[in-house]
Length: 351
Image (cartoon, rainbow, N blue to C red; front, side, top):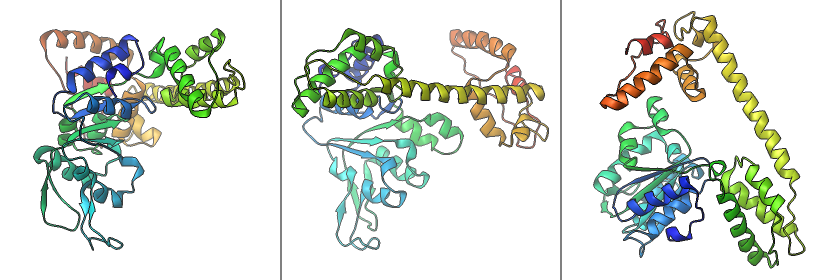
């Protein structure tokens, strides 16, 4: 799949296409980031097809779909008798992708105990099969993808920092469909043609009010949700004019609004507790203790929800602008779990 086959003309998607064209000829790891359903595997395939490895295999594996006990065998293969039921010698995905590209989706779900082995393959291009001692040499380009914040996982000790840096050589961030503007229209037209051909339909017209409604919808499931919606609409249409059941989108919008309300409620509750403790997070009388959370968990939730004391947030923005101009980067101090730790004081200490 060449980049010319990828559908979209919005500025954010065009930036993704530029990244693909830039990194495809280069033999380095790529980390594709984006929400669920944004087409991360499609982007990985496009990188492979535009690379010098296009004549070799593109092998894909979803790390979240394989039980942890079997994932090592899936990646590296196993020898006969390596475990109960291993009656034959089996080649792993790395060996299958030799001279080609291996795509590991949901890399954030890779168990910690397997991460050093993956790191070794990335560094040395060598591995041993499960239950064997023979070292195999491979030439594999790795593309990984995730919808998680890997850096936050590194800070929470759920993902190895050295593996993160090795994977994050060239990051590509995919925009959600709600930020791609007129691309919705182009994708709708593409899916109507695709599914009309697949299901033997003669749908050739899409009403303007339908397009407008689809462009207004947020698409929390992104391209995958849009694709499934259009396929259902094509199947249900008996004539040449697409007749989708727009009530489905109203139901989904209501569910999404409810989810946003729950997030807002969590943000309000945490903020109120922080005000009650004068923005002290740790310690026996801190917000974390009142909320029944570990201090590190509360700090992570505050970052995710964008919670900060208003005066601190303003001064932080000013310092960020000054740091950007000078190229400086600052880190915040860490407090012991039993310390009385103020979120505001942590930032004030950097002034």
